[in-house]
Image 1 (cartoon, rainbow, N blue to C red):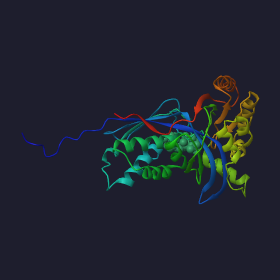
Image 2 (tube, helix red, strand yellow; image 1 turned 45 degrees about the vertical axis):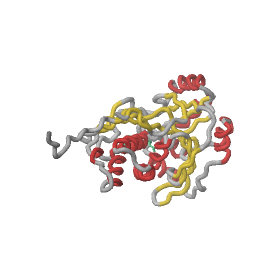
Image 3 (cartoon, helix red, strand yellow; image 1 turned 90 degrees about the vertical axis):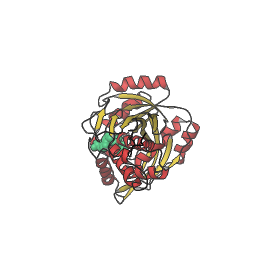
Image 4 (tube, rainbow, N blue to C red; image 1 turned 135 degrees about the vertical axis):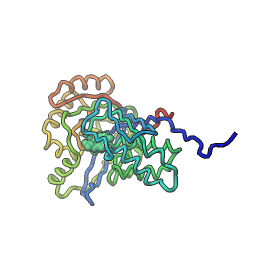
Amino acid sequence: MTTPLHPPTTIPAPVRVQAPGKINIHLGVGAANDGYHELATVFQALNLGETLTLIPGGTRSIIVQGRYADAAVPRDESNFARRAVDLLITALEGERDVDVLRDLDIVIDKQVPVAGGMGGGSADAAAALVGAAHLIGGVDDAIVHECAVAVGADVAFLLRGGTAIGHGRGEKLSPVLTRGTFHWVMATSASPLPTPDVYARFDDLNPDPAPAVVPDQVLKALAAGEPDTLAEFAANDLTEAAVSFMPEIAEVMEAGRDAGAVLPLLSGSGPTIGFLARDAHHALDLAVLLQATRGVNEALRTTGPAPGAHIVDGG
Ligand code: ATP
C-alpha cells in the first residue's frame, strides 16, 4: 500500500452560531473626538437575536433570510459578518492556517430589525467571529476582541452578552450586576433611521455636551431590581435628535407610558423603542396595545439579559 503524496483534505462541517440583539438601558453621549462620540452606556443583550450558519467550501456568498431579510442588508464584502471574518484572516495569516475561512458561505437568519438601533449588523459580526474562530480550532480572545472593535464598537459587547457598561466608543466593557429577568417590548418602526444622521443632529443640538456618564443611581437600581428608580434616572441622550427626524417616536413613547410601561427608551440611535414591562403578563398587554399604535410597525416581546455570541451546532 502506498501513502498518497497529498492526503485528501476534508471540508469541515458547517457551524451554526447565535448572537443577541441589544438595548441601551442608558446612553450618555459626550463630545466627538476623531469622528467618534465619547459614550457611557449600559447595554443589555436580548433574547431576540440572529442565527448565522458558516459553510466552509463555498463561494463566499451571503444569503439573508428570516423576518428582516431586508434589501438594505449588503450581500457583498461590506456585510459586517464578512468583514469580521476577513479581519480575522488578516490578523492570523502567516501564523495560522486560515484557508478554511476564505471561501465561507454565510447564511444570516435575520430576526433583528435592520438599522433599528438594536445592533443587528453588529450581532452578525459577533456571530461570524465566534463561528470562524471555532472553525480554525479557537482564537485568542484579545485577537477576537480587536477584530470585533474594528467592525464596530457594539460588536465587542455582543460577543460577551449579559448587561455591561460600555465606555469609550462603547467597546471598553465592564459587567453590571442585575437582578431578575427584564421583560421588554420592542416597538419597531417601518422606516430606518441611519445612526450617523442621528449623531450629526445630536451635535447640532448639543454644541458643547456634558461628559458622558452612567448615573450611579442607574447601576444601583439595576443591582437592587428597582424598576421605578431605573425609570427615574435612565435616559438616552439621542432621544431629542431621533425625535427631530421622526416625531412619532415621542408619540409612541407616550402611548407606552400611558399603558404603564415602566421605562420607554429609545434603543441606541432608534427608531426602535424598548418598553420595560413589570412582568411577562404586562409585556403581553403592552405589546397588544403598542401593536395598534400609529407609528409602530411591530411590537416584539423579548427578555434580557441574554448570553453573548455562542455556537449552537458545531458540526
Ligand atoms: P447599531 O444599533 O449598532 O447602531 P443598527 O441596529 O441601527 O446598528 P444595523 O441593522 O446593524 O443597524 O445596520 C446598519 C447598516 O449597516 C445597514 O443599513 C447596512 O447598510 C449595514 N450592514 C452591514 N452589514 C449588515 C448586516 N449583517 N446586517 C444589517 N446591516 C448591515
